[in-house]
Image (cartoon, rainbow, N blue to C red; front, top):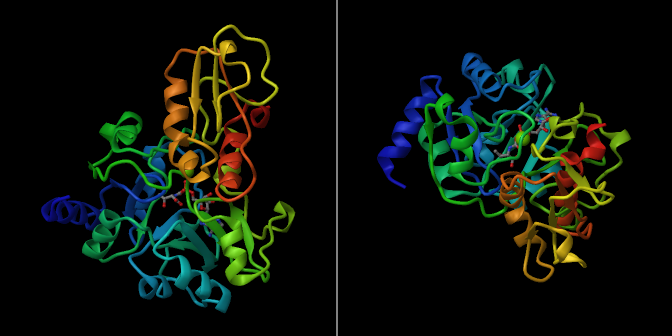
Length: 313
Ligand code: TXA
Ligand code: MG
């Protein structure tokens, strides 16, 4: 990473351009959050069917506080414990955050990414940066700069390359518009770790005070090859994705084992790359196996479910 590359990227952002940058979770497609036209370009480039609310990235707690009208004690505890890191807090927004960033919601999603290049960029730009995952709408999230270029290459002003993402699944999103707080999306910080710091967190989708996240839409995280979460129909060319070798490996033309042993962290880090490799293998279908629902397993199962055929019908 060179200082001048970061300076170039920061200049592009301040002038209303789009820069893809690495975070510890997935690559983000960034624009100046205070510039509605720049943010509009994010939606254009991703070809999102609607204006979905975006996560605003800041370099630290002080910058986050400027975006919100209140910071409840539990939210503060989590910020102090997990930032920088894969945790996004939904809090009531100030009027300085444009409506296009929040889809007109009175709240804003904020996080401090734990990646040196992202933090350098945020400090150098000196503005909050709105960034969804840097992939075309509904597709598999990018965990390398090459994935970003494959999906959006020519449409971006710059792609910063910070190597493969360490965590590999998106941030955990918790809303503080209600008490107890509500889990909006499982992600890179396990629910157990959040509960250990603030106690109860509501996970019942019916109690979610915020609108459905795009990550809950039918086609999200989808491969082009149909993916089935267990119960796959008969097919000749099958791919397998799971935490361990399948019981009958001969049934599969291509097998992706996500981790050695039961390491769910490693599995999360490999998930989106493995999905891309299977998708490129010319298979009839991908059969995915659930992982245990503990730790990062909750986020992995969430992504697999949303990528699956069952979800699309
Ligand atoms: O790890 C991540 O969170 C990555 C990296 C780039 O930071 N970003 C990411 O962004 O996953 P995206 O746009 O793919 O997902 C943002 C999620 C959406 O599901 C959106 O609905 C939710 O955040 N969100 C944003 N603002 C919200 C708000 N005010 N209330 C409720 N949900 C919100
Ligand atoms: Mg996304």
